[in-house]
Image (cartoon, rainbow, N blue to C red; front, side, top):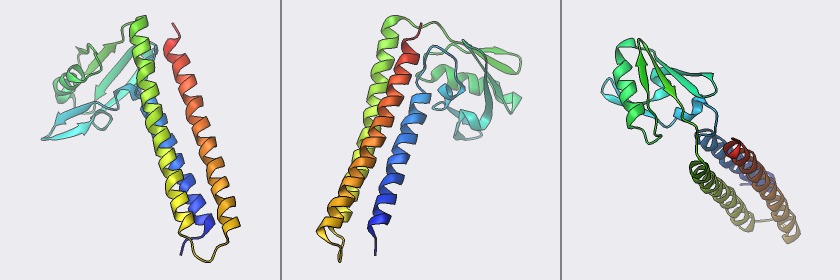
Length: 184
């Protein structure tokens, strides 16, 4: 049988997961600086299966506008380069021996505004996850047996407070990511 504490703990864990997911998604949105996590969504066809880029290569950012991809298997440089070129990130990778250099072009104003819209969409998905955790917690609280109505009301207020905290954290992430993207 669940207790009020269990329900509050579960709700907090689900909200934390939604926040972490949003944080990870924001990392893959390109800002003005090169960031190795930008390539987390790239999949490489290798050894007969589809693998994440970070499983088949090392990604580093030696300069603010340059990513360097070093495949673990030097014979797979072409496959990694092809995956980077075909990704929807608009990159122009160049092979140099056993490494792939990816220069990042400067972003124009329209591209920055488009990326801010993407960030807002990702943030809304995070908020939906947080709201869903709140709704689930409320439903579980209402189904509890042997608990007074006052205790349930107090617990619902606690759930709402945790919900508001997490929504505030997502809003903070959005503000900082927006500032990072719009910085010229």
